[in-house]
Length: 263
Image (cartoon, rainbow, N blue to C red):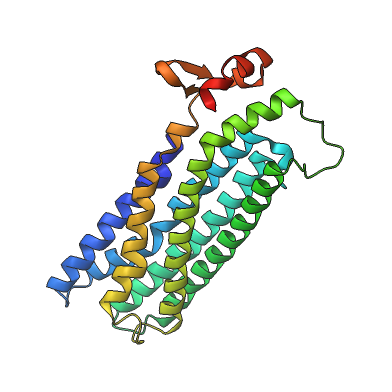
């Protein structure tokens, strides 16, 4: 779970820095430094958080069966995380450009448009992510592998996967809540940036509080309450405090002996 540090932890730090700087900016509206910090922090924070969602789904695919996924788990993480990094770079460039223009008392619209491009690409990545995840879940539940020549899953293995699903479905629910919040936030940012720095959206504090701050708060709390480590651990918790090893799920003996504890 080390990858949660450069993703979720970094996102949380950026959110705290961004909103702290926004408070500072409201107290000292003539200072440029807090404006620059809150601009970069609140815009960039969802990007590493989104990367964590991509990685979690890749690990879920490994557990439930790669044969139901359009992409292999490694390619899944590689493609979506690479796309996420590209969006991050575009937003960093746009944010730095806009902050520089403000510092020179010039119109920051060009930087805002670059940031807008990054946010729109991020929206597209999220939409594709939802489609791929949705297809995988439907194929898994109906036992329809992507490729017709895929190796047939034994009844014992299929039963073990269903047991795994009964636990992991709560993690998938958490991911759904998080991606919904991120999608709402990205949609708001798209509308906000498209109207410019002096538009009607950006000037209303309540909008950013609800559609940005609240959405990220819900997403971060959901990640902590429905934490991946609870569901992707090497052992499955069972009644009586005994741990069932993950590799045991492929065994007929382990599966049948523990069936009563899972149903």
